[in-house]
Length: 428
Image 1 (cartoon, rainbow, N blue to C red):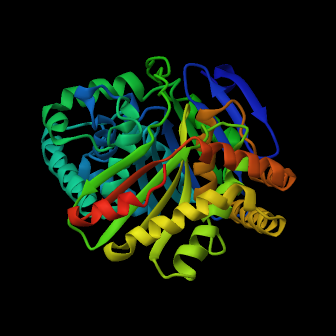
Image 2: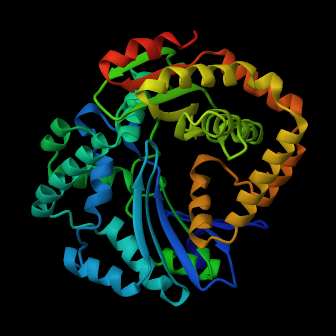
């Protein structure tokens, strides 16, 4: 069937083109005519929070297993083909999203597309490979557990959402993975890794119409409707004390943030930038530069479709961790009211540079398009810059004060004997 007969709708704006193929994927492209490369991504609207208890870790497992061969290539042939293209092949699994992506020279984009769609639509999932790859994932779990910053983050998220799937680790657990068969992997793949929950995006030196024509000629299996997610309640507050022998104390503190498509994104980005997003931020200046309490300290926004958190992370020598908590608490207490015009202007400039410089990255713009699964229309980086510069100081002060007034959850990881002094410094 000609591609023109299989298109339901096409849309063009100044930043990207979009087409929906009948019984097929949503397709987005961002043209970068001067680029020498193309980045293509297959985004699937499924993640760790969508798994049942028995399926814990299956989404991440499939991220691994889709590199283990297709109907046309075994695992070694697929690896060799990817290496022959000479670009970058990667994938990630998060709590709401899975993505497989390739970055290749522009003349090889058709080869990259064939490989990616073959991995998703014709995955071999051989049982022998799953038995081996399960051990690889166990090793990955051990590696994460050995990294204090990763370990405490998993503990912290679990405490923030104790009765919700969001709080479960993306990697799953040993018991659930041991019970998952290659047949269950295949069933999960067939249920969720299809339109309408599958989208294909590309950025770089590529013509939208050519990509659409290539995809419209492919068969697409019918999957389930997009996953329905249970909305979590309010995040927990208080103190989580985690005894563990390690060189440094690790601290994470989170307040409520924003959901991924919130209209408050510009104001939240600015607040975060001033709190802990750069070298002139409050946290970096007071904790590291003035007092030398920490090598790594900062703040971060983490957003999902229906919730979000605003987090501070810090590592400090155990003997100075209580002092570090005091300083962070002082910063938070005076942060919102103390925001100044010069500070805000500097944050606006920093965010503008990040957005505009990001426009030069082929892979970065491909990943940017993946956010289309979260909202009906993407705002271009240039338009975000305009909104950021239009944000006034009262809006930022008000937003920050509101979020910080709702309370925080502090997670403290340190040797057991050090925990009481550190936790006693935390202010309710």
